[in-house]
Image 1 (cartoon, one colour):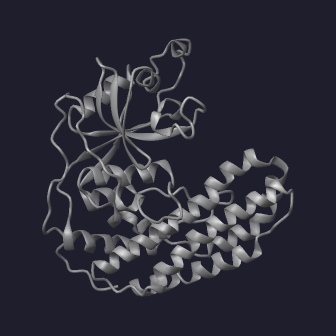
Image 2 (cartoon, rainbow, N blue to C red):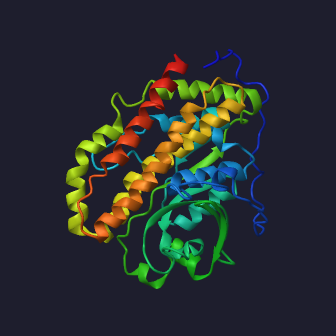
Amino acid sequence: MTPLPSSLLAGMTNAFPPPSSGAAPLRQHESHALHQGERVWKETNCYVDLWIELLHGFGLDPRAAFGFTVTQDFEGDQFTFFKFPLEDLERLYGTQVQELAIYDSLEDRVLAQTQRGHTVLVEVDGFYLPNTRATSYQREHPKTTIGVDFIDPVARRLGYFHNTGYHLLEGEDYDGVFRKLPQFSQQPDLLFPYVEFAKQVRPALEGVALAEMSAELLCEHLRRRPLHNPISQWRVAFPEHLERLLERGEAYFHPYSFNLMRQLGANFEFLSKYLQWLKVQGFEMPDSIPNAAQTIASEAMVMQFRLVRAITRKRRDLCDDCFDVLESAYEKTLPPLAGLAL
């Protein structure tokens, strides 16, 4: 990887908007390019998808922050739930994320921060998010994270980033998110959710400075990459996983596939796009490396469909040829990328 100059602070700009005036949100938001076009994994996990749109919504380029994807490991029963490291967000974009203490009222604490121009990241019940009509809205109660940048307590309206876009909810959904519906009054011991807030503490890097800092972070993350091929480790554990999948069926397959095939495939699809972005910024990057990362993304999807068929037919399929492709593609991604960074 090309040497990094010592000066990394040129061309900084504050891209965050001024504090909210309390008026209805006028945000016109189009999904970032990472959430458009040809993609194997349309959605990844709520935290990463949220931050892509949140950074994009504030005029920042989220592609610079994906160097951390090289650290994904196999954790025994799942692949690392990949998330932007908060320290990377501060170094790249001047965006500091802190835990928000919740006392008395979640609604009041969110209002206090959004009025200061901050964005509040809060774990909520997907049952009340109208943008999830195709999945959980008014059907299921999954935990998911949204980024709130506007609320109007009088009109009971809330503007929020979630998954691949920006949305508005109101009325009963507003009351559900803030636990103001009658059924919540019968649960006085209900715990407050975990909440963070993002604030701009210094101007964001941009241009050459952003690319150089991104490459520097990638080098740091490569020093933290797994010591062994995590796909090979998954392969060893997979026969036991398969027995459980065949025993428990489709209901168990969905969370299994989310935490293994999707997290693996989506992580490496983002790594592929990140390496292509680095190449555009002028860094040495043979096409073979991002292509190999994209192969992992594609083959993880192939394996997901293959397992669906195996479970439906109650057939024991160890997916050996899928693992062959995945293992080989990993060896063509991480070791040569680490070699460039030395």
